[in-house]
Length: 174
Image (tube, rainbow, N blue to C red; front, side, top):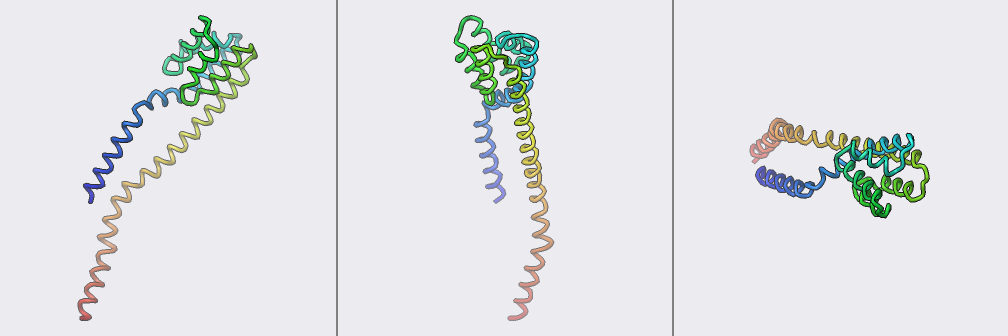
């Protein structure tokens, strides 16, 4: 019985491992997005345009978000369509709003400092909620080993003597 449970656990773990191989890039991007939005807002508040701000932040930040920011800025600088260039940035998980804000600022010339700051706050709040959910889930999962340790002891000390006592009483009655 224990062997079947262990085999099932290993099978699930391997299956989960195969599904999450592409996630490190996504997790790295989600972690960088609030910081990237703050840096973009600061650059634009200092007077840089969306392209210049994206190039500066991309070169400084690195990682998946930095690389895509730098590439999108280079594409726009070389005459690429802003919707296409910023859309590639928006393909990162959670970066759609960032890409939309940069695209709108590039296409219309509307200052994007306020929307970018607001977006940075929203991204930080989302990241905080996600971290809280993970922390609560870890607390629940941490009780499973404790239950597995106490269950055999409960059965041995609490249930088995009662069953033996009942069986002994039934045997004496016959």
